[in-house]
Amino acid sequence: AQKITQTQPGMFVQEKEAVTLDCTYDTSDPSYGLFWYKQPSSGEMIFLIYQGSYDQQNATEGRYSLNFQKARKSANLVISASQLGDSAMYFCAMREEANELVFGQGTRLTINP
Amino acid sequence: NAGVTQTPKFQVLKTGQSMTLQCAQDMNHNSMYWYRQDPGMGLRLIYYSASEGTTDKGEVPNGYNVSRLNKREFSLRLESAAPSQTSVYFCASSEDPMFGNTIYFGEGSWLTVV
Image (cartoon, rainbow over all chains, first blue to last red; front, side, top):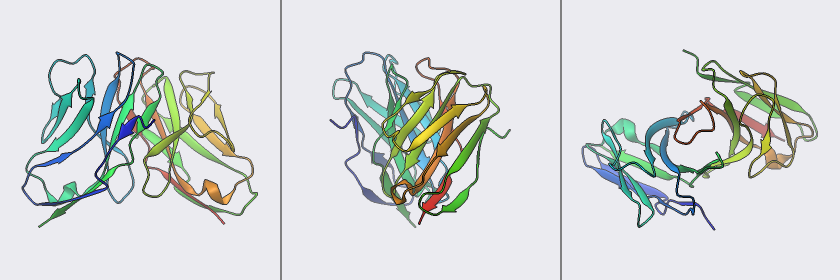
């Protein structure tokens, strides 16, 4: 079974709009972490935001926030006021107790001017 | 602050050749990882090292060997390269196996096997 599912292969958004990238996960571990990474066309992986399974509040980092719905096993990334530089691949990942970081297949986000 | 450094950045190999990808981190992290990323896909774990002196297989270890030379360095070796190993390889490190630490990635190594 897929541990991380990103159902949106591609998304197109107008500049300055907010965008939500979907991520659902599957785990039976009570303790886990969820990560979002951005991969621009240059290829490097850039850490954006982290949410721990025991964290009571949704994580926020500047324009990025994570909409964590534990009962639904959902960890969507919200980017507010999108910018042209936000165009990239976005990966959701999960880390369980075994230490291995498992990635979803990614969502390609394109911001239109 | 260099973070995680991988070399080489680009490499073309002929089928059957061998090569080693080098990775070094200057953050004093205990854990290090090697991932591969195929076109349009997420990253898949090849091998990881939770601490100096230990290595473990990930999701796709076949055709690879690793060496945790010391705390800073973690190398990935392809003994007999195959076209199926054409991919982008990422090295990463994290502070320790404790849950919740950020994993830092290198810039990637583009490998083509012809």
